[in-house]
Length: 232
Image (cartoon, rainbow, N blue to C red; front, side, top):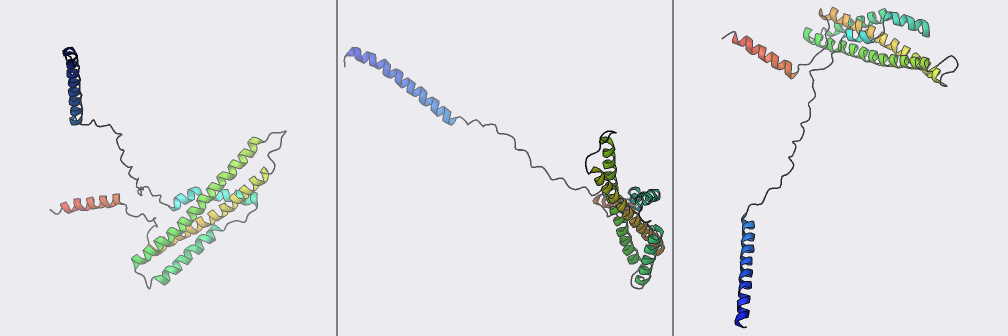
């Protein structure tokens, strides 16, 4: 190689070496630098299942049953329009009361006063609960019959008949609601007789059983602690 060629090659090799050194330094620095964290989507915590609130439990009383059950006036109208037999509510109430009092006389020889009271509290509660179920069912069927009759009147005009067969469906719905009214009226009378029997047996007015909730237990503990402080 001539001196001229050596002079030309020397700067090129020097430049290449410098480039290699710079690239190597960059790679080394990149390896040493901490890796950037890729932002990730925040993980949402799993939802906590809701607990059932037992403090809003519906309490069934004889008064609440009477709000849904048919009245004496309604039963008189139904008996006249549908030709149904009159429900002997006085006889039903009196026979239910007598039966429970007779049972109490027999059980009194084996049960304490408290046990007798608890037994008839539950037994009367069953009568009232049954009457409530019948009254609720009747109220639903009464609403259906009224809505169907209202729809039939709205869809009919003077020159056009209503839908074929709709009148018969309305009649069946009304007749069924009338039957449910009789059942509800009879069971309400039985519940009334049971409540009267409870008063005669225990000397107290019947009240529906309401279980203690955690909230009421806490209040009871707080009241007990407050009373205990009075003795300090």
